[in-house]
Image 1 (cartoon, rainbow, N blue to C red):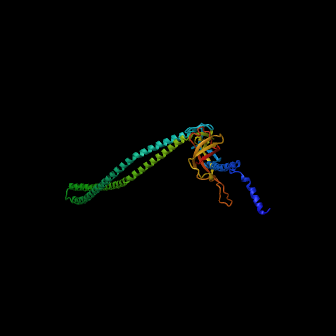
Image 2 (tube, one colour; image 1 turned 60 degrees about the horizontal axis):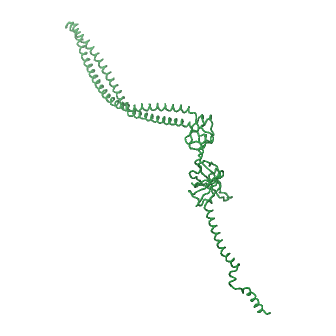
Image 3 (spheres, helix red, strand yellow; image 1 turned 180 degrees about the horizontal axis):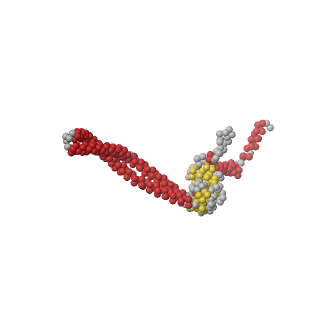
Length: 417
């Protein structure tokens, strides 16, 4: 058989199976399965894509972490004064309210100090009042004294002038007496010669002798008056000097008033100091009672008989009503996290879920707040994903039973959308 015949026979053999009618091949079971398969594959692919989108959207709608715990701001209660503890009014883990008296320190010393401060204040106030009264009196006295000494100077000057005039008059009297005495002595000498000659009578001589003696006595009296007048002048001059000195002293009256006012100001300052000391004594007496700064449970380290010092911690108040969550999220989880987003907190100890919201994000990563922050400026640097503290607060009423305790481990979930 030649080549053409072989090709022809092969062609006839291949076309022989397709010799069935077209209507039977299109509705065969294999054709139907093929059509169903072509329809289901796109549907399944679409379902898978939609499910993947929903799954991706759900997984990206929240962030969670197991590095979280319950936190609270602890309130340490310490002594503000030194003293002997006489009473402790609370026990361990006891609930207290704000203002409750927790510890009492012996108040005797501080009561004595308060009484002494009150006495010192009363004394200072009395001193200030007396000095305050002295100011107007000193002012009036200085003014009147200045006027009085000025008039005293004028009086002293007038007295000096009068005394000097009296001295001049006395000096003139002395000169007149001396002249009269010279004349009387001359007359006595002449009458003596005449008596010896018996030219005049003895009576005339006796009169001349009496006149001479009287004249001598008058000279002595005049000289005594002059001496007295000189003493009067010296006395009046001394009074004038004293009047001038008094006037100069009186002129220091304004300075005396200023000095008195300064003493008043010092007394007022002393009163203020004593009042401040009294207030401090009152405060110290109040500090003998240690009160609770906030409501919460108490953990105490103080017992009766302990001598405490200022700043010594005696108790710690845990305000369980103010607990919050500190969640340390990875920095890769912080992209869409914002304050105000809702949070669901799962508590490991009870299995209970609490609701809250993001309050704030810390200003730095956790390691930077440690005592020895890491130093990355080295040649062996390895990039490590850091964690940032996020504060989560509970919704009102979530912790009504106060079961959340600081330090508990929790798992918060932040819903981003």
